[in-house]
Image (tube, rainbow, N blue to C red; front, side, top):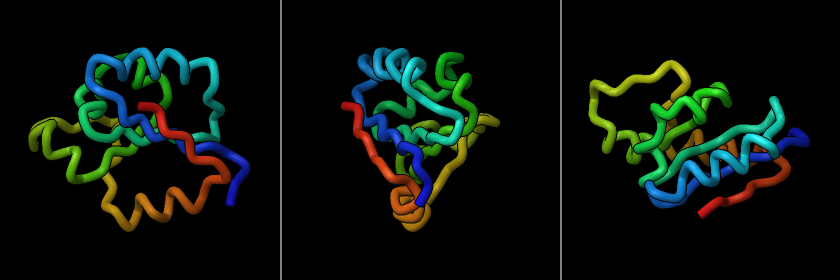
Length: 95
């Protein structure tokens, strides 16, 4: 387990970018972000791209459509999600 933080962004579409702005001052290079639910609809926003890789659950990625493939987006299944949660010392949910 690393000494880093996993941020779960579960906000509505309208509130996601507000949380992303907060993360810009909090996040460290060893931290990770998972966009969940409506938050994945903001994946193309340049403010999200600044963080590097953002994880998206495969069920949530379906709302983006099959043609949406971003270099900074990594689609994961629930097993990988559980592994990510165990890798980090802290898990913070932003709703």
